[in-house]
Length: 263
Picture 1 (cartoon, rainbow, N blue to C red):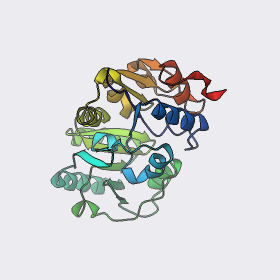
Picture 2: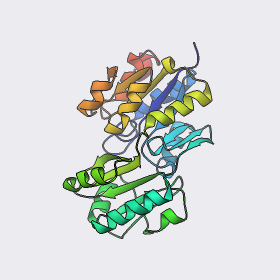
Picture 3: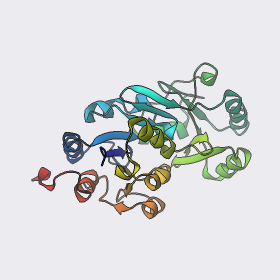
Picture 4: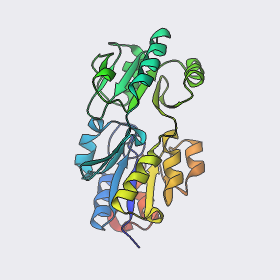
């Protein structure tokens, strides 16, 4: 048996609804690492938006931007930027429909306009600072993920117009845009191969629709108690919510850490 590895989503998993890491989560992950279990993050966020979380938890391997950018022990082992010509077509359509947008690189992210209520609300609810305005950011930096901010009724238009993209909603007005077929599972596969981890000894915790492929791929997929119904449906196990020590209880139930930690 090889060294086990556990992947953790961030929002709604490592972080509770107040965007805080519970004390039980810190204790559980530290114990996990002391037991020799490898820990990694798998998130839709860009690396600059979870650097503090990595430092707090002592994690330096991660799958970022829904599988588009993978780092193992500080080394980039896989990246898959969106072709510039596809971004130009996408931007033209977003502008035509008056939909604000953002572009995400590995070390920065920019928005199309200042103080738009949809951008302000979406990022504000995740406690992310409103990004600086630069609608031509994609012409100077590799873009791994775009975000369109629009009403739900406009979503079908973008899906029909761009069948080669995947649209993942993460807020009432916000949708991540990725090349079709990209997912956290792709990035996790790259890390498993690079680190020579066994798929059967891999675990993942998640809660949202961008975690479906990840939880289906790994040896044991764990859905948080606050997860979407479709996320719970593909999981091998359901733990408590992110508000109720779900990470800790899940790791104990899996037998990866000791239950005496919280005594």
